[in-house]
Length: 59
Length: 378
Image: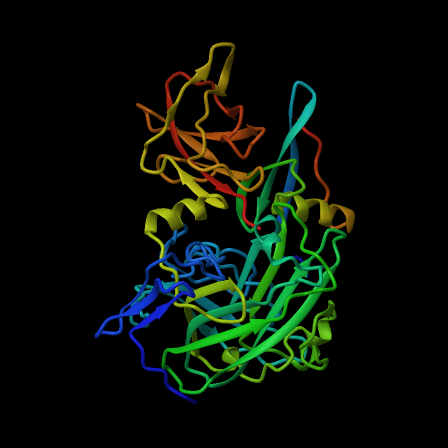
């Protein structure tokens, strides 16, 4: 059972480098840093690893 | 039991060391060296439930996470089928306290074996627990004290998870008993130091404490009253009370203190300002009420720059949510027009500031107003 309901995730890039993830988590849109100590980023990567979530590429 | 009646104790050279007046006041004339620290004893932030930055009440369901109500007080993962609860910062509190955390069952659980209701879960950074010396022969005991009140009497389990530098998890449990329904009771729970494993010295969770208020048999079948590797079968060993089995049942807590040693001392009250600053390391609302107005970059028509610094440096780089002056999530509003302009990016949210820049959907022709929420909780 996931502790967070993540319904979307997309990288944000600046000059070609990913700098954050725009995600909708438990119904709230937030910008998540690429910091493993951030609980949202850790959960995103956990769900990606489990194959239940895909992070869309940056536009 | 014997009684010694004196009014003065002298050292071996005849100098007064302790004097006791007729009212029983004791004066240490040559200094006082305590075996435990006198201030900053309490390792729990917001233990008196004073700070509630997210709001004072919520109708949250059985989801895990940080809900409205007192800061730093998390509800742990629940697996309760259809059971739901409300959470609030209640003004019902024992003498000497103004607030408590209160959970109320609004939908009763059917009571499956795999269910567990954990209304409170506190996580502490590992780097703040190194003085416990766990993982060594000198590992120190810790003692919890708290006031609790529930409409359901019985035996309740507390779970302690520690995380070591190899990312292994150890568990130990203990219990307390609520004897009288709807009555504030003071409880203490002492846990022996863990000599088997250290606590990781990082900004991640080093100790995770969970209060259980109802558990199925899947989590109570193994004795976990001594430190050992995490086994879910012992997660809530000893739990028999079930708050989620009765409609409108309540569970409340305040005055939560964790200190080194095997003796509970009186609750260490801290000022609201001090507790608020501590809470902001993990969660902060910056600029609410139209306090922050930003303008565009000179070389980019839809970027807001010169973003503000957080009042308190965060535990880790936080997740950032942007709200307009009107409280619309993911938007900022024009200073003059009030028109909403959706946020498409926050670049590099950091523990120091909101980020490097914010990109809006439409070109910026006037300053924009908004506020920011940082979440760096454990």
